[in-house]
Picture 1: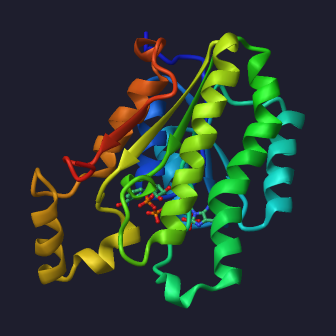
Picture 2: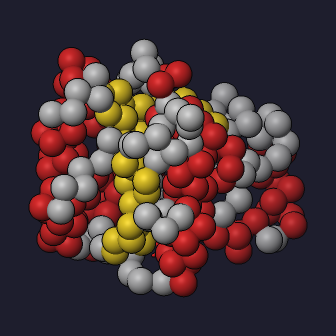
Length: 247
Ligand SMILES: NC(=O)c1ccc[n+]([C@@H]2O[C@H](COP(=O)([O-])OP(=O)(O)OC[C@H]3O[C@@H](n4cnc5c(N)ncnc54)[C@H](OP(=O)(O)O)[C@@H]3O)[C@@H](O)[C@H]2O)c1
C-alpha cells in the first residue's frame, strides 16, 4: 500500500525540472498526476508517460491569467479537483533595478504570483470540501536573500511566502496544510547554461556551505514528504533545500 494511494496531485510546471521530479515522486507514492506545461511538448508527454497511463496533461501559459482561470474551471468542471496542489511553475529573468522594465515586472508577477492566487482562489473552496489537502509552494532562497539582478524574481517569491503563510492559517481548520520549499541552486534546464561555465559554477559552489548544487530529485523528496501523512502536523513552514546557501 503506497501512502498516497487514491490521491490526485496537480503539479504546475511539471514538464521539466523540479516539477517533473516532484510529480514522478508523487506518482511513485500512489498519486494520480495532473502534469502541466506552458504548451504541448515532448517533455510534457514523456513526463506524463513515465508516471503511468492514468496521468492527465494540461497546458496553459500562466502569464495569461485568463488561461489560468480556464484551467481551474476545467479541473472543477471535470471533477479533477486535486488533493495535492504543488505551485511550482515560474519564470525568472535577470534584471538590475537600474533597468526596471514595467512589462517584464508585470509578466513575472502575473506568472509567478497572480496565477497562484487564481488557482488557490478557485481550487481551495473545492479542496476544503474533502477535509484533507496539501498545498506546497516552490519558493526560492531568493525570497529572503538578495541576489544581484534578481530583485523582481526574488520579490515574486517573497510575495508567495506571505500568501502561503496566510493560506496556511486560513485552511488549517479544513485539514489542509500549506508549506513552502525554498530551493537554492538546483541543476535544471533553467540554469544549465549558466552552470556550464566552470568559473561561474566554482564561484557559486564556494558560496554554498555544502559546496555542491542540489538535484531536482532532492527537492522532489521534500515535496513528497510534505504531501505525505507523515507531515500531517506541519503547516506554514518554509524549508530551505539549499545546502546551507540560505545561511
Ligand atoms: N533551479 C533552481 O536552481 C531553482 C532555485 C530556486 C527556486 N527554483 C524554483 O523552482 C521551480 C522550478 O524551477 P526549475 O529550475 O525546475 O524550472 P525549469 O527547469 O525552468 O522548468 C520550469 C517549468 O515551469 C513551466 N513554465 C515555464 N514558464 C511558464 C509559464 N509562463 N506558464 C506556465 N508554466 C511555465 C515549464 O513548462 P515548459 O516546459 O512548457 O516550458 C516547466 O515545466 C520554479 O518555481 C523556480 O523558481 C528553482
